[in-house]
Every structure is written in C-alpha cells, then in structure tokens.
Amino acid sequence: MTNTSRQNTSIPPSFKAWRITHNQRVEAAVADVSLDDLTPGDVVVRTAYAGLNYKDALAATNDGKVIRHFPRIGGSDLTGVVISSADPRFAPGDAVMAYAGGLGVDEDGGFSEYVRLQASRVKSVPANLSLLEAAALGVAGATAALAIHLLEENGLRPGTGNVLISGATGGVGTIGIEMLSALGYDVTAMTSKLDHDDLLRQLGAAEVIRTTAVTDGSRPLERPLWSGAIDNVGAHVLPWMIRTVRERGAIASIGNAGGNTLNTSVLPFILRGIRLIGVNLSAYADIEDRLWQRLSMDLRPRLLAQNVRVISLDELAENIDRMLAGQSIGRILVQLQADQKRR
Image 1 (cartoon, one colour):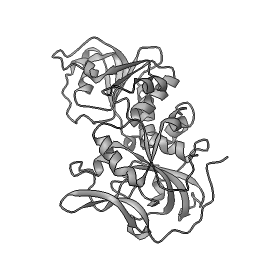
Image 2: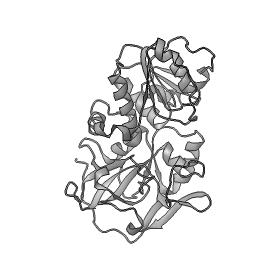
Image 3: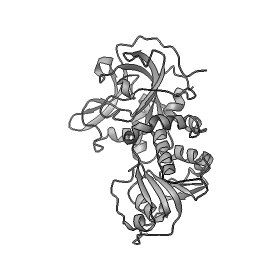
Image 4: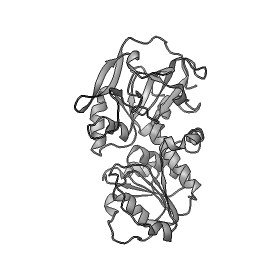
C-alpha cells in the first residue's frame, strides 16, 4: 500500500484550528477558521497529524515569547494530503509533510484541519513511511537524526563508550535512544521521572540514571564517563556533561527545557579536546533530504508508531499544560481528521 490517497478536493467554508491570540496576554483555544484566514501559500493540505513539540507548548503561553505576530495557528510540524497546489511538484492526493523553519510561529502551522503552505517548505513523505510514521518523527525525529549525524561527523562510533541522552522521556529523547541503540551504541538515558525505566530500556537504553546524578561541582573536569552526549535540558545538565565527556568526545546541544544559561569552563575544550555542537534544523537545511533518507532507512525507529500517543484537537490544551509541567512522555500527535486511519 502506498502512502498516497485521493481525497475530496472540496474544502469546507470553516474548519477547526488551534488559534493563538494576544490581547494584553497570550491565549489559545480551538476556533472556527476559514482558508482565507490562513497565511498565504501555494499548497493546500488536508492535515492528518501534527506533532506537539516543546516549542509549540511555549508558543501558547504568555511567557514563552515565541510568536511575534498574532493571531497565529500553532503547530511546528504536520503530515497530510494535498488538496490543491499551484506548484507543479505537488498534485492532489500526494502525501506530504512540513516542519520547522517558522511553521506555527511566523506562518500558520499544523494544528488545523486544513493548512496553506509555501511550496518551498512542503516535502514529500518518503515512500516507505506512512503519514502517522512521518508525523511521529516530525521535528523531534529530524532533530534527533541531525544530532546523531553531527556526532558521527565528529567521530562518534559504536563501541567507543556510552552515549548519554538527557531529557530521555521526551520526544527527541525517546526517538534518539531507539536510533542510537539500533546503530549499535550503548545508550545511557537520563531522566528525572521515576516510573518509566521499563519504557526506556524497551527502546534500547542499556542504563537509566537520574538527573540527581548531576553534581554542581567546582572542578572544571570530572571523571570522564561518556564518548558522546545529546542534551535536551540545558541549565545545570549541560555544564556537567561538558565536565564528564571523555577526551575528544562531542555533545549535541538541542534543548533548553531547564533554562538558557550556560556556566562552564574552557578547560574541557582545551585539555580534553571536546566539542559542543549546536543542533538547529534550520541551520542544516542543506542536508535535510539526506536526513530523511536515513530516517526512512537506518535511523527509522521500529517502535515509534507503537509508542506514540494520538490525541484530538480538543485535548491539546491539557497536553500542553502537562508538557510544560514536565509530565509528558514520548511523542504526542494531534489527529486532525476524524476519518484518518492510523496508517
């Protein structure tokens, strides 16, 4: 079965979307919108799934300061089926995806039953991925893949020691564990949550440790523990990683769930020759086709679609609250079409 299907090309006069507004403070709710309410674009897509990412959760808060222009429909990644296209590269019925690059921030995003997109940001779903699988990967999967790709470019290889992943129960964390494990790496998962060790080991973690293992420490170098690391937390975790990565090790810095400040020393860089790599999909747009090729092949998580949690648009608000409170586990997808099968 292919991942494309023909759809009714009629678009209802109004449809549901998660709309973020600002009137003295940021507020977000499900609202009725029309196609004319959306930001301009060349391709109209009937949305199947949209991923809930940490940035999407922040965008719906008064303190997040993610969105500059309102109103805005949130959602930084999506999959769906083309309804109409002014660009000859896409035709009605094509299975497509879009993610990052300002989606849901500078342009209306995926938390909408229909979206209108600039053709330059639309990508075909790889032939061996379903709409659900591609959405389950989304920003989180592409980010995890980019982190692993960059770590490997900087010398990370299986058999050279454990790779540490912080924020291990989040979207990037769970996907990254499965990817690294499948490639033959020994993965240590770090989490503050006490009751998800079995899940992390099921995904491939050889070891699970708590964030309480992190010490503030006054020494610029501590006992070397990791051949490489992926950090989703920032705050006090990243400086500790810098102090504990082995000689010539590398750290991929992705997230700031714990805060933006970095207090560290130059000595680990000078004396151990370690590398700190910033991971941002927009900065590596030139290799995203290569990343998705890997995501559909050697980096394809086998358990991802089984562990993803699918919610409705009406359940989005409570799940945003849970994510901001640090209570989310794994990848969460919003299903935008009631008739969409999990395929």
